[in-house]
Length: 229
Image (cartoon, rainbow, N blue to C red; front, side, top):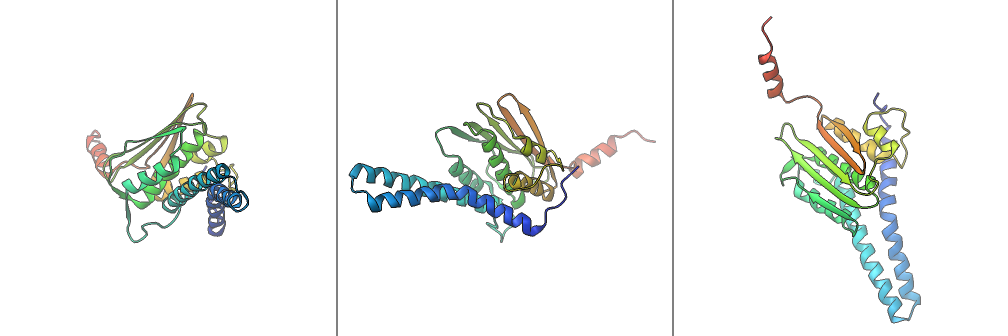
């Protein structure tokens, strides 16, 4: 049974909390680095602090750019988004020594809500593979029947009970700052006319978003192939 709709103000507040949570860590590291520069005269310590500031600023920028596209109104003047932009922000977010992003989706213009859904599934997959591994992304089909497939593979890769429950439509899962992001993904899927399927195997999680109803052409073919009454 699907979740009851969350009040708009609660949805906005929880999403803001999620974005702040993602950004506060690198911003805090920048502040710490600046404090070291203000109080430390040792050249080696100052060099370490400067490196920390540079890495943290890059991470904060990458997270903000990702959140702007995944949660915000980026490109709001257009109904479509270049998936190349989605790839760029995903690579920025997942750029680390433990995770490899295999972006297999052909570059194209895709509906804005679907691109947001794709990025949110990437974020869920990255959380599932928190110890590192490979995140693979694919986008298949024509404009009227696009299917998004995101796979996480790595040591102990798995979805939390909360995330899996939300994506599967479990109405008993509480919506809070920890669960708001997968809940938001289900809203994006619903608005896109899609359903999310979760497949889990040892050290593998596959998230597939596909049209909730078959394309008109397939439906017509099914009817025409049916035996006459």
